[in-house]
Image (cartoon, rainbow, N blue to C red; front, side, top):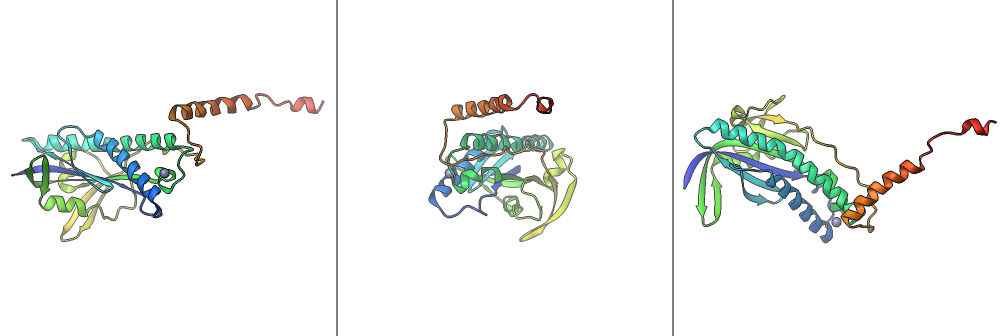
Length: 239
Ligand SMILES: [Zn+2]
């Protein structure tokens, strides 16, 4: 057992709970889509940042700080900011590959999903039992409590004061958040600028293999160029 200054990061996907109707197919597909998106985000985490566990629609990651706490936090902050682009890239791939396929609430709602990330720094007890690592201590509770906050957006990185002090990241939104059972926390919120979400033209039940689909999309583009009139012959009709 070991108590060390540790960066804690929760990547949380939101958007589905509002409209997924209680259908088995939707729930199953929602689970697959969330897992896929979380996987894309976790894939972007590199040493010293690592996955601790999945918690429903969220992933808890951590990085134990070496002697140079500032260097670890700055490294984690840089990695975490890239999560948003990875998330959007995978999300757009899912929308395109699922286009014309399943019409369930989950599949047609992939574009409504958003990513928020909470990052904190504090002394964390790391307990190792066989291959499992249990994180304990107040910072672990605080980072979870901050998932409920006053930010009026679903896509942002929230850094606590402790994390932000070393993160080397400029933000324009500093605020205080209530943190049930603890002092209100000063936080700094960064809003990422990501690629837009691709528009789906979903026609359920007409699912094509991804490569056929890609071909169809390019064929559609060719076709619209070919059928677009190049010249207007208004001078002929008036003759
Ligand atoms: Zn589906």
